[in-house]
Amino acid sequence: PPMLQARSTFNMKRDSIPDVESPHSPTRHGNAGGFKTTTDLMRDPIGPPLDYSFLEIRAIEELREVLPRTGYRKQPPELVEDEQGQQAPNPIYADWVKAPQEDLQTNAIKLGNNYLTALPPVFNIIMREVLEKPRNL
Image (cartoon, rainbow, N blue to C red; front, side, top):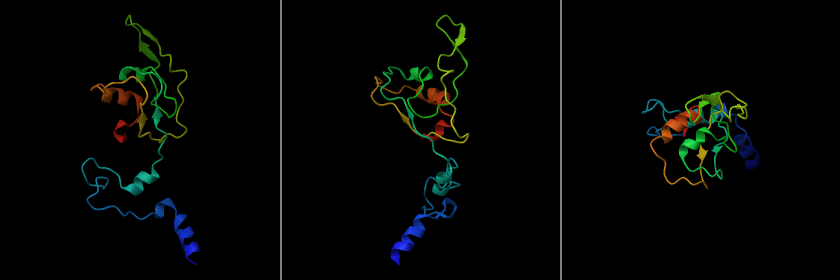
């Protein structure tokens, strides 16, 4: 019966998912950047986005000092420099939560409903401090 056949294809294991990408797809192995196929991407665990929305952030540098509402950011440094240039304990270090899986990757960041007017060039530097693999954004 057609209903049973549809159900069995729905329950396929991830390893048996056919790779139906075009040979010209940017996610093909061998293309610039060494991207993965869609099948490989489906096997990698994707974590929730880092949600910095509604935190009244005025400058992108504030992401160093604020924990996201959801998601798992990269471990913050234990010590930071204060206004006088002295080493001081990082206030967010104690509240940081490690991801439940070592290879859990975040590939999105939410910055809506803040006071950001532009993303300056320092954005890339900040993303390397907040995300394990910022290239996945």
